[in-house]
Image 1 (cartoon, rainbow, N blue to C red):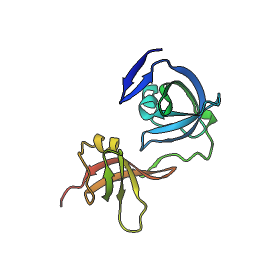
Image 2: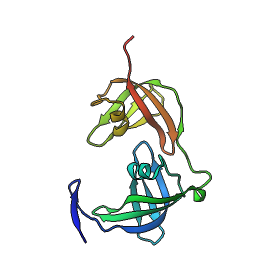
Image 3: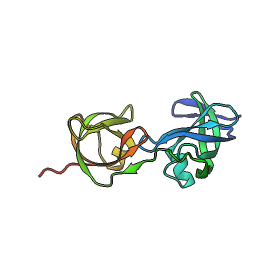
Image 4: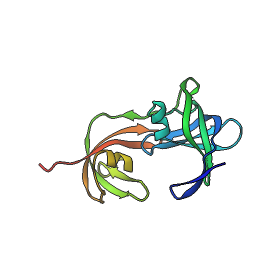
Length: 170
């Protein structure tokens, strides 16, 4: 077994082929988990592994075949080999984009944590925003009170920003 250093932790490069069912995947956060069919526990998989396979998301219940390595926090898919969406649950909550940009204010944002929340105003549900969405917009650090334009959708856990832009002064 070869051991390398990745993101500050020792990683075994010997990958094992695993088959499992998608437990959940959150496109805004950029990751999800599958339950291994062999009883080996949860397998973490990131959006990058899905994109390399050619998908942007994975639905709850879909069958996933991957190459995974054991890391200090558990199994992680390093390569997706197959995704069978025909096994996904019919009532699986999917990301449904709103499609228009709306005004919002940064409630709080932590680059260290990799996410934050936006608000359209009092009494409205918070909008989760991932650091990758902020980076894709070419924005630097977001500060509480910053005004943005946001496009979001409804996901399984609430509103998720899929695009943001600085609000232009009128």
